[in-house]
Length: 156
Image (cartoon, rainbow, N blue to C red; front, side, top):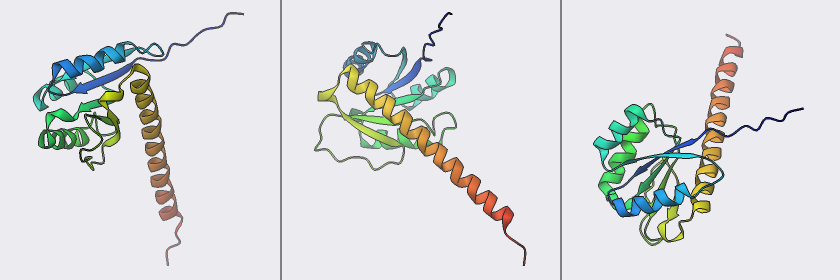
């Protein structure tokens, strides 16, 4: 009897930031992940993000907080309103734990750059994807219950 090994489908990761050196470091760490093939695209600003999204379907997004607060907020706004990216988990890569966190609904996690390793990045991706799938499942079940309960109500 032959056993067939299924290889997991590759993860498509979009890296967003304005510092090629730091993004290169993140890219190197992602390339060290052996548990799963990871395909990456890099974007440096809103225009390049939209260009990447025309031909690339990310499963996960990392954003470097060095892009600045206003640019980060605008990027999150665009990603959360885009049909292709609104349900994709986002992790912000931070320089310091002391900087103010951005309270945006699209951000699922924060990761300190000083703690970057292949394992830390992969675990963040894996856990965030699992969390987002659970969120979407619960949302769908809640919506289903609401529609079922409105159909079953007796008309007075």
